[in-house]
Amino acid sequence: QQQVKQSPQSLIVQKGGISIINCAYENTAFDYFPWYQQFPGKGPALLIAIRPDVSEKKEGRFTISFNKSAKQFSLHIMDSQPGDSATYFCAASTDTGRRALTFGSGTRLQVQP
Amino acid sequence: NAGVTQTPKFQVLKTGQSMTLQCAQDMNHNSMYWYRQDPGMGLRLIYYSASEGTTDKGEVPNGYNVSRLNKREFSLRLESAAPSQTSVYFCASRSSPGQGVNTIYFGEGSWLTVV
Image 1 (cartoon, chains in turn yellow, cyan):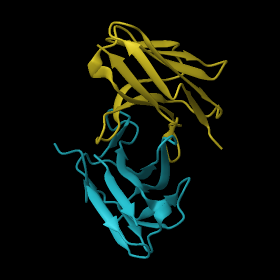
Image 2 (cartoon, one colour):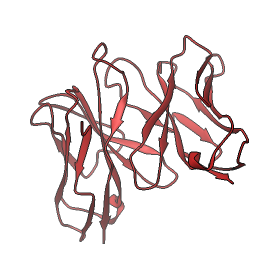
Image 3 (spheres, one colour):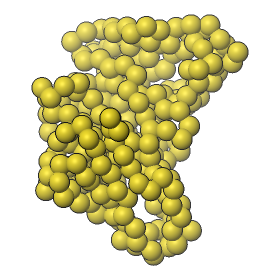
Image 4 (tube, chains in turn blue, red):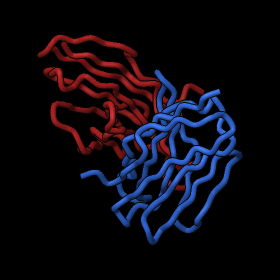
């Protein structure tokens, strides 16, 4: 049972463009939604996170949009740079119990110069 | 501040051999996790530990055992390795609510190949 569905699997964007990655979740008990960035050979690192009490969170060029009624959230990377080329994972967890993250399947982003 | 440290980084095993992946965190976190990462499947939870001496199964626990001997260390053991366990393994830790930034921190990963 895949509780967090992520799309697209891969994405190619020109430098300066906008990268958009989408995720949908099933478990309404989830209340923490982070995005992780992973470079080859490295562990995932937290990029930005949101809680369901807000519809949008922005940190620099990275923005999370959150739609609680649709159970969807997305990552927008503005002015995409070649250094943003990485794999991005959306995830979700509850803030009680084991608080383990359930991950999407990942999106490989390539930003072309 | 080392964060989450995993050893070894790379390992090749023969089918049926056993080994232990070691993990230690220096952030005084209570919760620790082991995930495996396979192409196209994201990261899947193998085992979880809420505190020293407690462990709980995750999504894919078959073929693995874990040990949380103290707050810092959480090890993952493969008793009889199988080719299906070829994967990248990540250890992670998370602070408790009110203990600081509420997120999960990952180690650098352990690449395991079973032949």
